[in-house]
Image 1 (cartoon, rainbow, N blue to C red):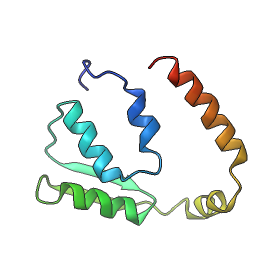
Image 2: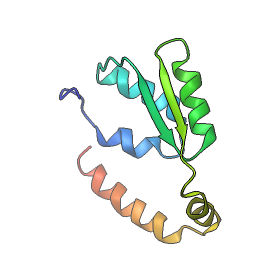
Image 3: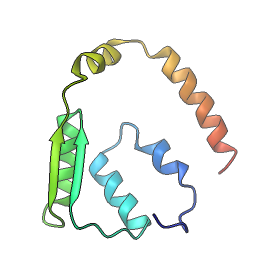
Length: 99
């Protein structure tokens, strides 16, 4: 990865819930990364579709949907996520000190 990139944490911070195709494309552009073949594995079909849409005609790709953790993901999606939100906010406050 290109060491000149600044605010690296922003990539991680703002990718949650975002279009992963657009996010990856931006990441590769910002880091001046040239890819010969993109391999992308995710547990959500919509993320695979977004990556396919972003890179279609640009680079060869292999997209794989990983379903082994579907039960865990479903349980998480149905939870209230209070603990995760609390931890995310704590992490965000630490990240903001470096911005």
